[in-house]
Image (cartoon, rainbow, N blue to C red; front, side, top):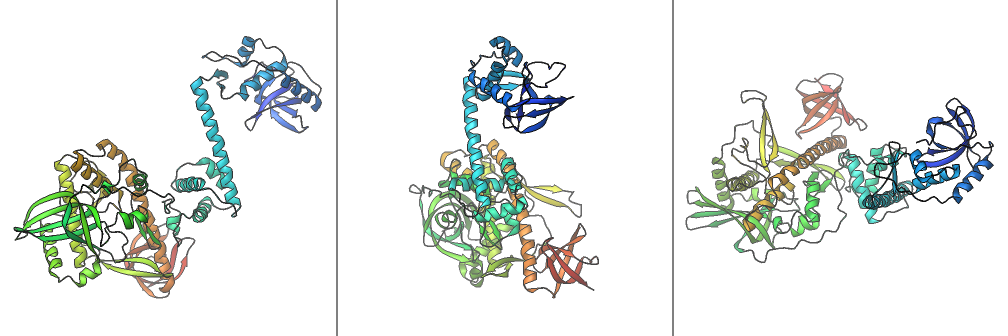
Length: 620
């Protein structure tokens, strides 16, 4: 914006207004050579300036010395312009001077500075000045306060980064942790990111260190987890959920849980009763839906985290331990609200009917798979196993290659990395797996029959049935589809609401329909949740894979260097070999001098931690 076209002599010896780093300043032009101006400020500092940056210039000419500028500035300050009323169409500064009948240089400058000083009232756009409405003024002031608060927050963060002796208030900690996670997840937090860039360290390394200072980490460092952006620590003290169980019927029998021996949360239990006609199987799942609704902070927390996370470095529950391991967990000796699926069988173990009931139930015992496998000859386990086999015959899963029987999980025990072998085909695990499939399948069928929108687990295929390398992948949808792996026309997950957000959503839908005849969430609401859920699930899977690779390398370095190891070549990545190490089934990057066959033996001699690659020699 210029109030006039400069004379042929240009701006020499004129006082000008121009912007410097967003601030409106005045200076005296001491010399002009073509479009380049030599200027001097009141503090006698000099600078060079393009004439295109001039906002306003005086008609009068002044002696080329700072005193002239000081005198003019003092004169400008004595002028008290009347704040103008600007029509909705806006006015150029030249037209505004005409409207206000301003002719003197000092008055022109005073009016310009007054307009800029009252940004809450006036703004400039496309060479025109406009006046804000009262509502716009209020919004501007609120935004200005927010900007000032943001700058104050960033300064506190900068002080915290620069000096370890500085601390942050809880509100600042929560905000900083959240924003650091967002940056790692690829979200834009530009002002904080620019602050981080001022330090010599790589931003990700600095963020990881800051998260550790803020307690957003496990006791044992896990590079894959720390750099993932996944939330780790719980900072908010969530109020205990109100248990709405007074009106629930109480089961006359008890139930027992079967889970891993090191499990800290129990979300499902089993019961078996004799009836006049045969048997009644009960599958009982902790009923979080009685405690939570979509407006509660605890529900929002579950939505953000999506799933519990199990790593060698530790476990990160979806919900804080006081809920996942205590209030919601089916702990032995306690009575807990559950969403029960009862299935009646006749004496020949033919299925007669199923029923879904919300009730109170006493938990008699928390058993481990290992303990049940030892006592599997007991009548109750023997009968449950037969029932599970009968249930399996009622579905028609497609034949597929038999999966891995054993998996190996790494964990830290007193600082030492140990490998735990898990038999996925053990009697207890096979039995419980089939009973949980029955629960999920039955609730999916109920939802389909009642036309309820739930988060069904469907399968999409890549390639035809005849294609040798046909692949499939699971996805969430609000409409049920055939699930070939399970062999049923509708399937979902609902047995682990403590550990998985999808299970919690499905339980809330079923429970609310049983109680009120309608669901908590509409189909559109569920559809809007799916992209974020699946994005977080993919991130969790990728983080687990990276973490497993790290701990596999640690395990080899700890005690497997210079020993023959077996591997299966899975892929070639940037000149390195992605190899599945047997028997652990974990994949790492291997550096070899020669290309290996599909199955081969190698001896590792060094871990390159910078590249996360294991250096090894191929054994012929």
